[in-house]
Image (cartoon, rainbow, N blue to C red; front, side, top):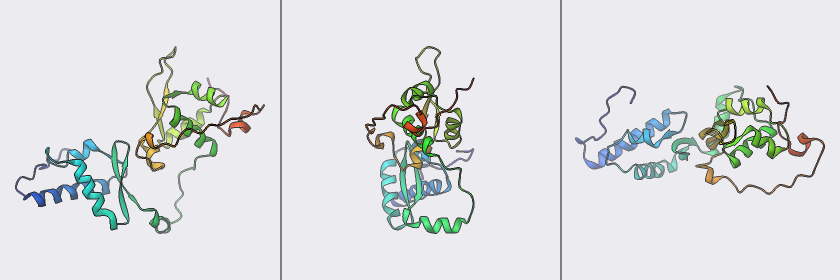
Length: 206
């Protein structure tokens, strides 16, 4: 790990202290990381015979009275502050500007990608009845909410889009299986696709 040789097994410690040290290592790494930490990384902190899932269960139980909790995000884990302390955190943070918020149309585009991924830009345009703005997709990529997916088997092998762990983290989801059911939407015909869908539709770029 980063060139540091770590004694994973801790054979010189009694079993109870060894387990406690593994717990503290996991908590320290999660606390220091701004991003979810994968199971593979956490497994490198403990002995080969250690039951990582049981360690995570014990850590979750220990944090029950703390202002932060353990959350699963995709294939990783993260420490997140509890909602009850959101106002205190905002007050301490001061007036620093937040990231540019997502517009309603970008949120709708993000939802479409989440439900239909992997999906091409042409596939999105077919869903929304109009050409999807490259700027909207670029903003979602800049926020690390979507990423390039596998090439489509369609002629020309166009790029697809998929959601990221950042998307799961933003909406408090453990996996895509936690997405709500796709709503049945019936949109009446209109001469204005923007009015019908409220989506970031724009001119096709060369």
